[in-house]
Amino acid sequence: MSDKKMPLTGFSSLAIHAGHTTDPNYAHLTPIYASSTYVFDEAEQGMRRFSGEEKGYIYSRWGNPTISESEEKIAALESFGVTNHAGNPLELKAILHSSGMAALSTLLISNLKSGDKILTHFSLYGGTQDLVERILPPLGIEAIIADLRDLNKAAELMKADSSIKMLYLETPANPTLNCVDIEALTNLAKQYNLIVACDNTFATPYLQQPFKYGVDYVFHSTTKFLNGHGTAIGGVLIGRDIEKMNTHVTKVHRLLGGNSNPFDAFLLTMGMKTLEVRMDRHCHNAMEVANFLEQHPAISKVNYLGLHSHPDYKTGAKQMRHPGAMLSFEMKDGLEAAKKCIDNLQMCIRAVSLGTCDTLLCHPASMTHFSVPKEKRELYGITDGLIRMSVGIENVQDILTDLDQALQ
Ligand SMILES: *Cc1c(COP(=O)(O)O)cnc(C)c1O
Image (cartoon, rainbow, N blue to C red; front, side, top):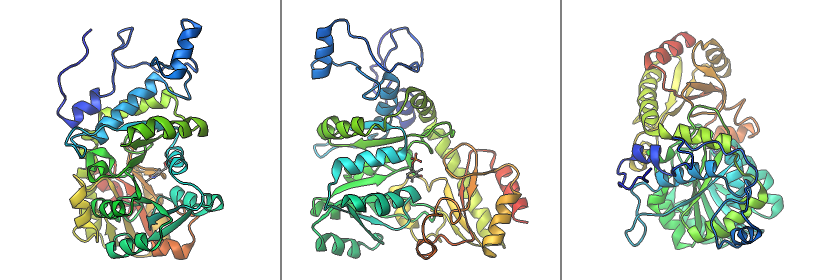
């Protein structure tokens, strides 16, 4: 069997083929390598593998063929069409983790130490917010949280405090879909030698590629759109400094122990193959749903990046191919009306999480952002009447019919 040599020029071709190596038993798909350890032909070979002189797997916390395929696939998608400073195709290294939070932990612990600060913005994912506000401060790492849509404010903060080491972005952000300008903030951060990391979970590399703008790390909860079917928890950390990724970051990943497993990696690889077609349909459906909700008399506000009424419409349009599949809307009659709408759903699913083929609805104030105090929640736009929706890829007419009857 010959290896594919033809250069692949389309995103979907890479999503389907990148990262695959010919299986020794000619299986079309890379099997689920359910093996914790790997055999050495002789002791000398074990020594060569440990010293790095010979490539090869040793132990599955360190690496596994099923996991490698998904890592290489996502690295290929994040670097699709992106060039480095010299104008050559950008090379990236991805490390798959057991969850988004595990990938985030590796990112933070491998880049920050006691005394360092993180500069970040409002409306982070609930878990991220909790991690930077509760887990990191006792370790001596503080977060400065500001509205980074204000570039002058961002510049002022970076200039004022030399202990800021990392700029951490999440765009679009949860659940108001606020966006920050990745390019402008990265340019600014680089003047102060900050490490820049971006949570690209909501957008996926099909809609947005932060590496284009010079960020150092991209991070995903692969649990969401990359897997796409809600079958596994996972996370990936992708970095452009290959040397650092292969040494220090790999060491931190292996020692913290947040490794993925071959079954979840297999599911992720299958999911990523259809990313482009799924995202096109997700975005198309979301636009129709947003238009419907915006006209509805029971709703006071719709947050969707495809609507000109969204305050970050321009930033979204600048850095994203399409406006995504996430939206949120506010019931005129607050909490009781929000509960009733969610309870009335017949096809759409009442659940947290996002990015599955199925449409999911949840109530951020009582669910995903329950641990954020009410005053802070409201500052971030998470009112009691707000419903978050991950628009699925069902027939859009059925989604609209379900919403219409739920809102009666
Ligand atoms: C889900 C999510 C995370 C956390 O990922 P897990 O896979 O649940 O650990 C982080 N950021 C965003 C934007 C998410 O949606």
